[in-house]
Length: 335
Image (cartoon, rainbow, N blue to C red):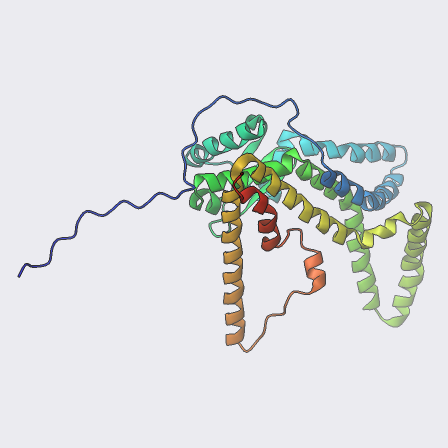
């Protein structure tokens, strides 16, 4: 009886179907590489009430400086141009988005994939800067300002090349559609008004914690003049600043629409199957994390609250089912 046979040579693992070598080819750059689509324009219009509130705040502060205040006001109005200033973008990438420059190995991985994406889009890829986030757990990417394209280290190391290309094509869609710069520009001009609102809320909360007599004095000398100023502002702008109350919900709806537009951009470049696979992976990861959190809460005798309708209205990303449904026309082979 023959003894056990020695194990044969290990069979090489089958390569992932989305792991491809993008061939070198000549780039044809389109005459019109950027546009501002309806989603970007709608987002900018929604920021108008916030901008008016910020203009009032900056104007009041500028009035304290006399003639020099006008210079400060003009400088603030022109400061939005910094969104397209490359050194400022570098500060945004490092300080706000926590990104870094890719290492030589990461650049060797990113460069051919990014070149393939930009060639298909007819875009000059060197106009954009690729960044990496030190995140080994989340599959994520970001498009910001005028030229920032960032991707997590997890996505860079775990995704097959064609799926990585689909993710980058999605982020490029945010740039060519004007979503990235318009959202950052709106956020920047809304910042003084939002900051002033937070300060007022802190002042009001602090006053109500004082003894009753001091609280009444605070209401008379602080809150009443501010309320009168707010009423005068609303009246002067025909009630437009009141839209600030519903702007977060409308901006979230615009954000969801911009995500669908970016998906369509990636799908139109031929990355629909790869993007669909990425979305399925993200959905499975989210469901797994939710199940683990529920099990941990149940072990402690607790129950996680279910997200309410208002929370879904404030979500800036559509449900994965909707995104996959929108990709279906691109997944059906042509007849």
